[in-house]
Image (cartoon, rainbow, N blue to C red; front, side, top):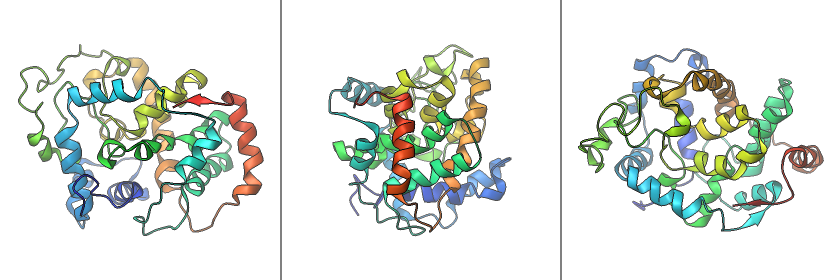
Length: 285
């Protein structure tokens, strides 16, 4: 097993999420249900979280933001980015053999079938496009995984919390305190989150989407916050209101997979029109 890439594909993390948060429990997960992640966990997932929790320090996140948020690597449209992501081969998910584009279309079509706003459908289509970081050479532990604030104490509700003891911020005189560098109720706009595909895509797309969509993209992997109610001391009243949209999106993120393949070519005109409604022909990545 490659210690820098302990998962054999990025969807293995999502499969583990589905196991930790069964659909029947999605509305009111208890702490005991969350902490049952130890049962039947794949060794590769455990190895992934060991690396993630060891290396996601405040300084690491600052360095990654500087490295990637200049958005100077490539210019491409959203559908082109989907096709680019499709070159990321994932053999890890035992539940489906669908391509990356088919995964995205399944989520979007489920949202569309429930008659949500067009921007909501668009979020389903694009929410994982930040995983192209893997194609820019990033290890998976710096692309996927549950996200959390850095610069303050790591919540005990974060999966495999014990691995944070290997993190250099663990004993830091400021970063190890409850609020760390932040003021109480400062608002998540003022909080630095661990690095990954959520934060990256948020910065690529934020100028073109309503605030509700921005929150869905930026925080859909922040399971300690929207599923375990952790870090409430950092939330503003605005965060509390907008996180209801993150929670509305979560079922489509986790539970929209099926073995029925979407017809990409027949759906493409609808989604290209939808993309053009919100985005320019090219975005900076």
